[in-house]
Image 1 (cartoon, one colour):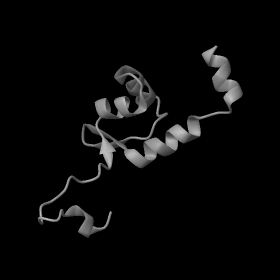
Image 2: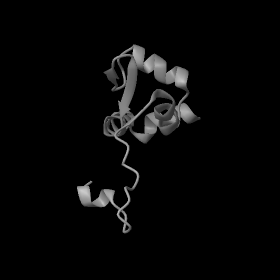
Image 3: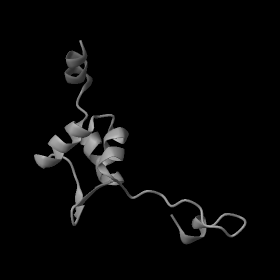
Image 4: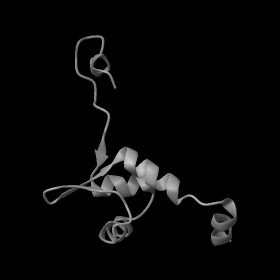
Length: 81
């Protein structure tokens, strides 16, 4: 986002694009439960940034991670049936 996009026509700041999610928002964005996200995090299977005790899930890292988890339809479709 270029700096000019931060301003509306009236010169007010517009909402900033989110760079990361807190755990509850990350779980919602991924469509999984918070407890499942916690398990993935504890096992080091999902990207997370730690800022002190705060966990932030970078948006782009989550998108990349989810894309890597997608397998051929044969595997995913068999699990659904």
